[in-house]
Image 1: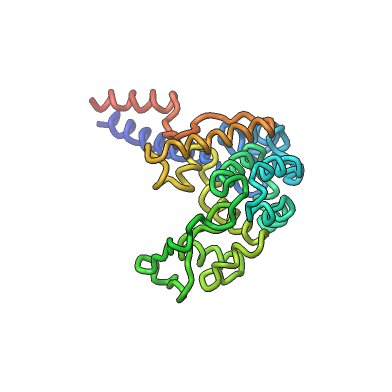
Image 2 (image 1 turned 90 degrees about the vertical axis):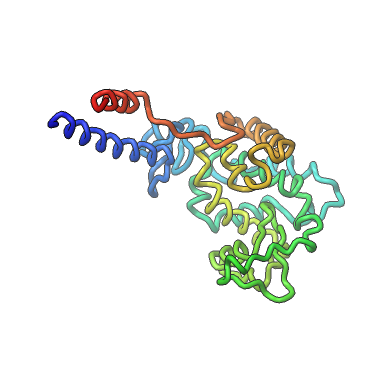
Length: 285
């Protein structure tokens, strides 16, 4: 009986250790800490050097935002859009930089791989910055004030996709507007009238919905943006297009695209913890 109690205590302790390990691997680091290439928080070259994912990185993946998103990098994307595209006269590299600087945590910790990820999704969503608004968007209202009664749709307003990440739905416009100090619920058209604001809405969505899963691989970011429509075999052509853009931009920025490009990886216990669990199981058997 005593052995059984000791084993149970050991098992509970190991569970606590494992939960902390998983949390560390998710890399929700506090301010001033780097997220290492292996998904752990800390300081120094092992964490902030080569492969650093976020935080005050000093390695080859980190760098100044303006240096990473150079005019040449931006032009190489937008120049692929047809000259007749409205977005080609709307989006600019400077408007992106200005928008990003209103999110200092992002601007001060962004990595080359994250920029490759972000601009791959921008490219898929708005065709090399060709579109400002969703094609035939006026016919798709995206109003759900039944499930979100606190964000009642304004009369005569529509909430179809706008901006480089195609912000959609009344609740997203409302929450994004509250965060940015803009009444986007009553004036959703503002997103497509100002390029800096358009990029700010994309960054708001990114920071709140996409950045938290970056460490899980590119596939997890697809799921965060358009999982209901593209993941689980629903639209492989679009998934393949996103991956192709991502690989291209990783190559341009000189970073490895990493693994798990198609799906969110499953977090498994380490071999050491697994062996303890097997040991405890055998004790109880």
